[in-house]
Image 1 (cartoon, rainbow, N blue to C red):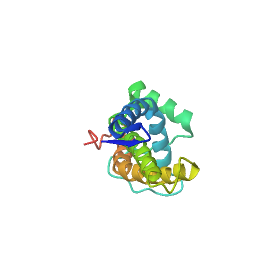
Image 2: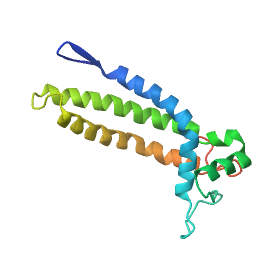
Image 3: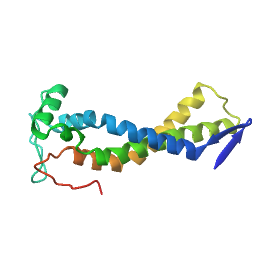
Image 4: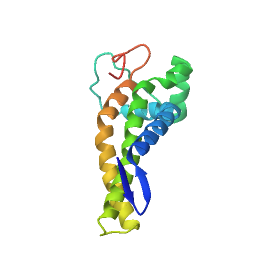
Length: 160
C-alpha cells in the first residue's frame, strides 16, 4: 500500500523488501561474530549453568580465542554454524525496522501535530524499536540455540 504526502510516495513493501534483502546479506557476513558473541555470553566460570543433555560448554578467553578455537575444531565452516537461523532472524528484524519506522514517521507527520523534526524521529524510532524487538524475539531464541551447539553435539538439525 502506498501513502501519499506532499507528492512524495513511500512504498511500505519496497522498504520491507529492501530491509529483508540487506538483512540477509548482513546476516551472512555478521554470523561468525554473532556466533562467538553468543558462545561467550553463554559461558560462566562462576555459576553452574543447567544445560540440556549433550549441550556444548565453551571456554573462550575472548573473541579472537573463540575464532581460533572454532577454526581449529570445526574448520572455517564452523564459523557459519547457525547461519541458517541467523538469516531469517536478521531479515525479519531489518524488514520490520525499515518499514515500521517509515510508516510510523509518515503517520505521525500526517496528523499535523508534528512536522519533519527530531520529535518525529524519536517517536518513530521508539515504535520501530518495539516492533523490531517483538518480531525478532522468537528468532533470537532459535538463533542462540543453533549457535550454542557444535559439530559433534547437534541438538537441533535446523531452525525449523
